[in-house]
Length: 77
Image 1 (spheres, rainbow, N blue to C red):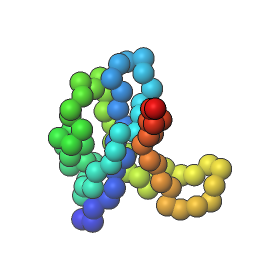
Image 2: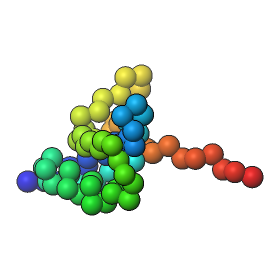
Image 3: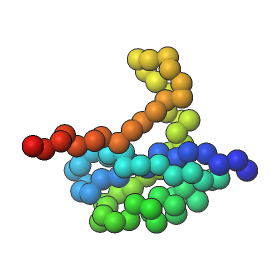
Image 4: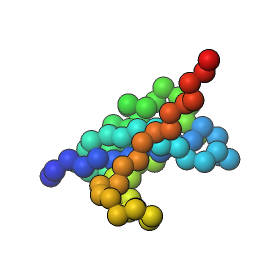
C-alpha cells in the first residue's frame, strides 16, 4: 500500500479550536494515528486527529494539491 500524507490537528482544551500542528506519512489511518502521537506528543493534548491530506478540497481556489501549513507566530521585537 502506498504512503499518504496525513494532516495532524490538535487542541489542548475542550473549548479550543483544532489547530494544524503538522503532518505524517503513513500507509493507513491506524499507522498515521501512531506516528502522529509519537511525533507530536510533547504537549498534553485534549484531542488529536489525523485526516488524509487529499481529503481536503479547496473552496475558493482551484490550485491543487491543497496545502495546509501551520500558523507561524508573529516575530517579536
